[in-house]
Structure formats: structure tokens, C-alpha cells
Length: 494
Length: 93
Image (tube, each protein chain N blue to C red):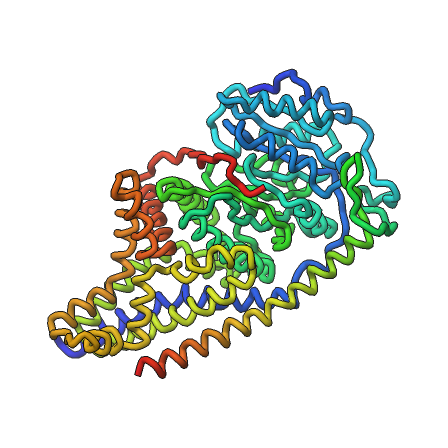
């Protein structure tokens, strides 16, 4: 190989490694923006405001949870005469209808039972049924879209409505906190993920006035906004929440995140259930990306959503799995071409990732002390035990290669060092494969014990990236996108 | 798909299509806004919860001020990150 060809190849491989810095820098900027929320937020435009709120509760076989949900909603710190619950029974086969009928008698005029004869078309269809009923007269001034199993803390709704006092705001969302009564390793991971993805990321989105997604379990829309959206929400995709959020903003209204409005939600307790839920989300995001292809990186089309910053943030998450595949391959290529250059590129990227990881964990854990108390271990293990070891290797190359083996009187051979080097270079790609293994073996007797161990080893982040790869694959194959409901059992903290 | 004729159904709701309820003291033309009269507590009544505009304004101000913790928390995180990195480098040599 000529020197010129070698240099060109090495340069291109370094560019690919540089791609890996994009998600790191994007996340760092996002976290810095979170700090700016101290000075720039929507509270100056907020004021006490109590519109008449129609709460739409889609219910399919929610008999175990919907009664308690209704009781809690009626006990919200909100004028009761300004609250009306529309429970849309999506042709349930359990006791949902009886439970809701009883509650309608207990709260006359405040609980409305709606029944769909044919169900199973998806949450968006169910919600639209309720929204149509709520829009049928002029009573409703705002509509709250929620899930049957979530629990609104008593002050949450009034903390959301105060932002609607600003006519520029079309929609408000709340902080969904993981609230399962019986915590598992997986719910603790999700707890931290929600602090990172909501309390942090959505504050940053408040700053840039570009909200990526209103939480499906906590969307408050002004009547004007929901009417501007055609009086219904999107039904053609798996990401009705995101489409509604984008359309709200494209119509010229703001979407605001209220961090002090807390809604508790029960989240999946098995990797398989989590995989199904996140596959739906990831495929939905791919559908959104395609649907709004005219918007990205075109600030002229929309001042905020079309901005470069928002697009970089959006695509950083979307293409992260691809980055996790191509960057290790670039390390491998560099290793073949120039070992020293490969080592430099590897150390630069992983040290940057390690610093960001440390900063993010310490910062984000402070945002929700409740979650910090239960999920600090999962926060530390979010990238996975092995990735943490890879970070340590990047920081201190001699520590794992020389010093620790020497404590036991061992020394890595030249061949052993090559194997170890290739392992740390390729680990992030391999971690996604191990994530798939963790899911596949979960139903087996061994899997009951081994799957949690594997998830801690590979990390929750790489597991999500494996789901995203699955989503890419299924979208490319144009597989049917059916709406699969996440199983709920009513084990949310009361 | 049709709504069933059951208790609590929209058609049965006493308020359906009826007059717009207002919070006492709400200014005309600002339907939905809380009354501008102060009460001493956020009281729960038999009719449900009643708003206290002064307390709610104070709550908004409190939440606004609470957001000023964010820059301080970011600084704490940056200092801890720097400290761990430096100490780690020293130990790793």
C-alpha cells in the first residue's frame, strides 16, 4: 500500500471516529443548556390558571388500575367543577366497564364513560374517540391526554395549567417518574433514564423552544391547539405523541415542559417487555424522521424545530447505534494501518465519553433526589460495567494491561495484548449483541439469573441501541407496525 | 364504535352543554383564571380543592427560584468530574 493511500485511508477513518464525538458533544451542550434553564424558563409568563380540563383516559383491560386512577384524579388539587374525565373503554374484556360505571355513579357529572365496540386499533384511535366527545360542546378549554395507569401527584395538573395562561403556549407536558412499588434492576435503570431524558433533556428543549416529544401519559393541550390539529391526533404512525408535539410547534404554538409536575408511571419489568415498548418508540421516531424530512436542518421552514441544534440532537440519538457499529470498525482499520494512531483516536474518544458520563451522572442525579436514592447504582452502571472498564483503559492504558496483572505476577504476552486491544476497540458493537442475548435467554431458567447480570455488564444504553438497530431493520423490511400495549399491573406507588 | 347509554355518559352528564362554570371571583373576559383573592391555605373542601391565587403565585415564584439550583448543580458535577479525573490520573501513573 502506498503512503498516500495509507494516509487517505487513515484520514477517512479518523473522520469516522470523529463522528463518535458528535453524540458526546451534543449531550454535553444539552446538559449545559439545562443549567441555563435557571435563567431562561417559562415561569415569568406563567400564572395561576384553571381552564376546564377534559381528561382523556384510554382504557383497554385496565380494570386493575383505572378505578384508583379515577379516584386520584378526582382528588387532584384542582377545582372539581373544572375537571371532567372521559374514560374511553377500547372494547375491554375484563372488568374495566364495571369499574368505570361505578366511578361515574360516585362522581356524577365528572366521570364520562365512553365505549368503543371495536377495539385494538391503537391508543391514538382510542384517544380520538374521547377527544371528539370532549369537543362536542364548548365546555372544555383544555384537554389532558394520559394513560390509565399513571398517577398524577396532587399538584401536577395545576402546575401544568399555569403555563397555558400564556396564549403562546399550545401544550404542556410533565415529568414522568418511574414509580413502580416493587423496584427491579430494570425499573431502576428506567428511573435514571427518565431523569436524563426528561428532567434534563426537556429542560434543554425548553431553552431552544423545540420540544421533541410531549410525554404520552401527560399531554395538556389548549382547546385552540387541539382544534388547530384538526380535533384529533395522528393515527397513522407509532409516534402519535411526537407527531402531535411537532404539529403543535409547526402551527406556531409553544410546547413547554414543566419539571415540577410529577406523574408516576409503572414501567416494564422484563427486558422483553421493555424491548417491545422501545421498539415501538424507536420505529415511531424513524417514521417521524421520514415524515418531516423537509424540516431537518432547514431553519427557514421552522425557526426552532428546523434549527441545526435541534436536528443534531435528534439525529445524534437516532444514529447512535450506527455510530456504535462504524466507530469500532474505524478503530480496527486504524489498528491495521497505524497502531499508535488507533490508540490515540481510541483514547481521545473514550476519554471524552468518560468525562461526559461522569459529568452527566453527577449532574443528573441531583435533579431528582428520589430517583437518586434508588437508582444511583444503575446510573453508575448505565453504560455497562465493561464499558466503564474500557473507559478506565482509555484513561490509564497501563493500569489494566500492566499494573494489575503484575500484582498477580502476570504479564500480558504480545498476542494477549493484541486480543485485549481488539476487545476494547470493538466492545461497543459487541455489547449490542450481548444485549440481544440477554433478551433471548430471559425466559429460560438460566436467563432469570443471567439476564440481569448481562444487562449490568453491557449497560442499559447499549441495550437501547440494540433495540434501535432492531427498529432500523424492521423499518427497512417494512414490517407491520402494530401497536402493542405494555402490560400494566397497577403496582405504581400510591 | 359507539358510545353506550350508561350512567356517566356524556349525554347524561348534568353539565353537558350547560353554562360554563366559573371560579368565584374570576374576572370577566378571563374565563378560567383563578380568583385574585388571597386565601391563607390551599384548602380541600367538600367540593374538592379550592385555588388560592396568592399562594399559587408564590409557588410559581418558588419554582422559578428553584431553577437557579441548576447552574450550581452543573458546577458541582463539573468539579467532581475534574477531581475524579485528576485523582485518577495521579493514581493511574
